[in-house]
Length: 252
Image 1 (cartoon, rainbow, N blue to C red):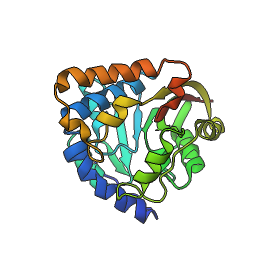
Image 2: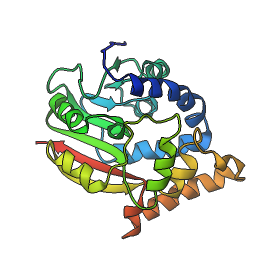
Image 3: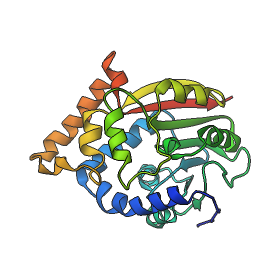
């Protein structure tokens, strides 16, 4: 079911409407990219196992909800600012809302868990969105956010990519300390993990950079790259050079 909530975010809506077809037809249709994104979803879900009613914040074309449904969990709601994203997501889920993260159309304490994969760095007012997430979350409820992690390695590539048509002017690259500082105002931080290295760049985004299509023996190299990313995420010093950060937190 779709509930339309009007917002004054025209540029971001236009951008997300544009990239939705790329997500559907390229990013999540390549077998190697799907394997990487399933690994990404599993890294989020293993930190907070679904229970009660879950919210997929910025659900995009619905792949995380499909991941949850395929593993027997069906009690979730997804929202996104882009109606075109949701037009694809409706193939995978039923409870969908067109909404703005900074003005959520949900009652207080509606959800037990919020999963937010790469949503905060697209927003104009991140602290407001975090307050809204806290408002709709039950006391003691959990959040898992995966967000950008600004380092000297990824800062320039992200600056260059921002000039393309896949990103609006609101797109951000957070320093981990800045993001954690904002989150601590609303949540108790439980765990922080670093995520996304070689596999992230080669496998995850064929709609923007697909040099991996030229690599032979993908059935061998795809799991190998994912395993390399796992090792790097546990390697002291090196792990902090990741493209992303996974934050598990709890509402006080």
